[in-house]
Length: 408
Image (cartoon, rainbow, N blue to C red; front, top):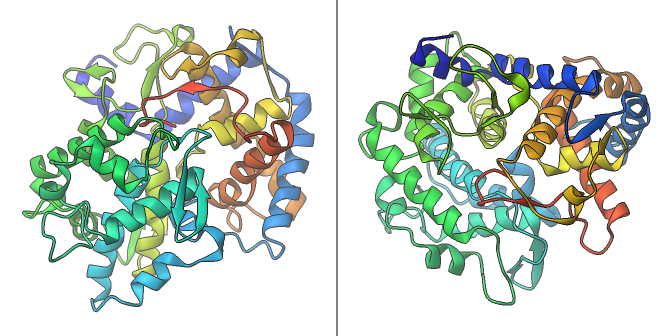
């Protein structure tokens, strides 16, 4: 692939994600990964553990998608449902509001660190759920809106001025309640505002996140159906410029794409492995908005699993992946390090590998239980469960990643 535009376009596809991650998986099968050993003999026991976790969490096997909306309901409180009841708006405006909320919340979700917590009227909420609840309250207060008379929106006018202290205040950060990557989160919001402003074709003349809902309705919905990959493509196109300090190709910021010397080739994509983790999780979250608005989203399994520390931790903690060097477990590892790239690539491939065994144990087909449901009911929850069993002090992941608050 020698044309830059073609290479960038390919790296933004789920086909490229799977192809590169499964190529890494093939290297691991040949014991050619520098930092991890792959033990496929441990997969059946891992599938048992995931299936057991699903049955514990969802006895009827009615599993929702792995989406941000689950976190808004932390502690059994339907916070979005409560807010929705107060809205005097048609279904399309409600969808725009949900886009505004969901995109800002997902982009603010990268790992909080083990010490941070959010106090909601005496209820303590931590980790992803805490970040979701905090971002929901910030949204309701109009933090992301440039028009304080219309707080329930996120637009360029509200996002571009956001300073780290505004994020810190909204998330109750203090010396005794530290949150990882406050500066990175604030910068991401400001970058988001600039991206909205620069693409009126995607976000409308008022540079609002919810404009992307209208764009997809008009450009991608055919006969009441919308491909999941069309949502992802719009997310990657519209939000591509927001990521900091990333690899660029012909001046284009590639986002969640990293290098590994194990996959060198003679073209422009040499050594590059795309993941687009936050963008795909955001896409899974936006799917629900379209479905609730009466649009059928097709091809959900064209999206991939999510290479983050809960899914990745599951495979280390259950012995499917074995770390070759103890030092990796002792010190924070930079997100761009080849060890992290390997971990993420093998995690994504293993999620594909374990999906069918989990379905078999539950008596479900791929159509009945797409990967988005296995992620929510099984692997992500199982990763958190085994982490608490292995490391009861904080339930943290087996590897500590030095993140800037925009990847994990």
